[in-house]
Image (cartoon, rainbow, N blue to C red):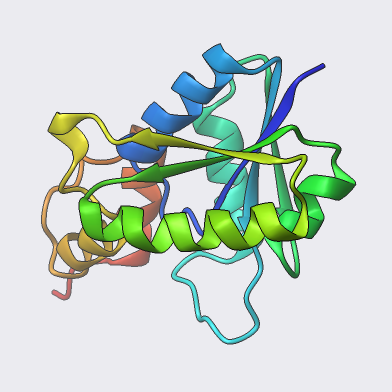
Length: 161
């Protein structure tokens, strides 16, 4: 079974993330969407909320599993016996950073490849931080995130009366 890991913060998960999930699921037998835990970051949604939202929005993709991990992604991928790490990127600046990480991962575990999936053109400008910024100010994020995520954001950012 060819297993791939697609990791990120997914805070919140966007349609761009889901595009990568669907495309990776078509390429691999199994895809683990893994939320990295970072002790120094203060996410908008905690890991349980992000895992719940990811499960909700990927429930119709049978070969996708949601998980979380600590430490280096490459160590997690090796422990899961992944053949590949899937990385999405929006722009050339993302690619430069991702390529550096891919090289380091290949140095540590040469048997695990990195597969880059560029964001589709219509999603290229959408990032989780942009979605958070729009939601913070009461803007409509329904074009950028699935309904379950939009609902969670609206509960998080209740407009002041």
